[in-house]
Image (cartoon, rainbow, N blue to C red; front, side, top):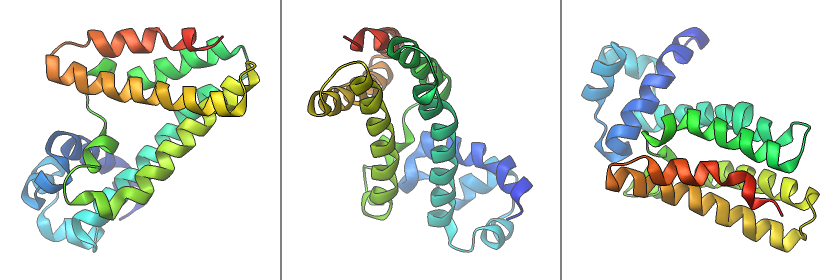
Length: 182
């Protein structure tokens, strides 16, 4: 797929996989959402749905790097960087309206196929949070544990917000991120 065409359709693929999951998204549904015929989809993604999802994960990895991880690497206090990370996560998840595609991929038959890519994305995020926490004075062990707890809180708040039909849990967790710094 040409770079421009890939760039154009990746957000649509993200949306389809977020809403239907990997197992639930059909080529017909993807074709309709992208406006590409089935033959065009297979021409641009010869590996079918699996190649589409791998492209989506690469796209999301770049977005994570350019927003969330970038915020954590900026200069400024740890509290400021965690606030910026929260702002980036709010944008990615549309204030909690959108589910996490990584969590969706860990369910169903797709888990085995994509677990390594999902693991790498989550590890990069957790490790970057831990670095900031260490800079704020935590030991390496405590920073790692706290960064994992923060990821758990964020991911859990997304699920709870979706399940309860209210964005309050997600927004509360995002707002409390700077408080994670001692």
